[in-house]
Amino acid sequence: MHELSIAQGIMDVVEAERRKHGFRAVSVIRLRLGALSGVDEEALRFAFEAVRDGTCAAGATLDVASEQGMLTCRKCGARTPADDRPTACPACGSGDLAFEGGMELDIVSLEVDTDGEDTD
Amino acid sequence: MAKIPIEQRLTGRNDELARANRRRFREAGLCVVNILSSPGSGKTCLLERTAAHMKDAVRMLVIDGDVETERDADRIRAMGVEAIQIQTHGACHLDARRIDEHLGGVALADYQLLLIENVGNLVCPSSFDLGEDLRVVVASTTEGDDKPLKYPKAYHTADACVLNKVDLLPHLDFDVEQFEAGARRANADLEFFRTSCVTDEGIPAWCAWLKGHLGKS
Image (tube, rainbow over the protein chains, first blue to last red):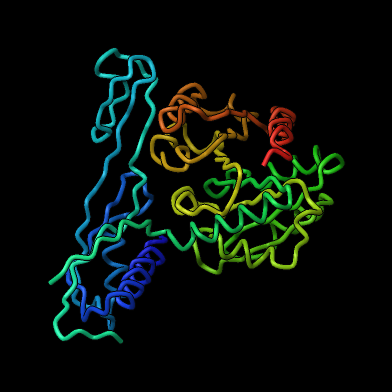
């Protein structure tokens, strides 16, 4: 359950951007979350609600894009989305599959409200 | 309304501190190993056996991460190896900042090998780089051979996988081939070791692998 420290990491980025750009409030925070990131989306949303109170992100929503990653066959090179977790390569039947990607744990962008520029 | 592009890792602050740790470790010529597992897989026993085999030939230091108590560090000290206990008081993983804090007054160049026993947990520790050279996941035969499929990230980010308690295999319905195939699905390049801290099986091979990495970093 380290989602709280990840949620605090979101707030650290938001505050750093606010010092740079001087916006009033954040309305949307876009994240990219890989299936192997080790972070549970629902737990992260819950933790974020706890840390956003009283900040410029108090009214912000999290827009989360999930990345499933890909499996690459080490025999024939075919690439398969890892969503349905196949145990064998659909192209050649080999079980020698390497996992790629799915580790994303990124903050992609912010939608901010610039009305009444407040440079703090 | 305006859009601000960011494109940044959320563990960015930890990654930065981990890079600083890694620089410091390299300058000192220290090889650092981050050991992950679920609670009860025998990490501390493995470290005790590792200490018994290596302490006369290699200058070792151990960091033990636990939620509470000094018990693990005491066990390592009893083996004649210096140990630092980190009590996280609730936190489910070690991070780069805690490692830096606890190594503050340590002359790293006095050691060749630092073994870090992370908090027993297969989920959270795998998200936090400590600045290590090698990451090892320890599993045991009493946990079930499907664990790599259930906790792929720990295996995905590891360099080696130790299957411990192999002396119990005759009493268990545990398929070693299936376990290793599952781990290979998460990471095709894993090195495998099968160990028993009771019979000492596999411990020499594991220690030889560690020795092979000393002074490389």
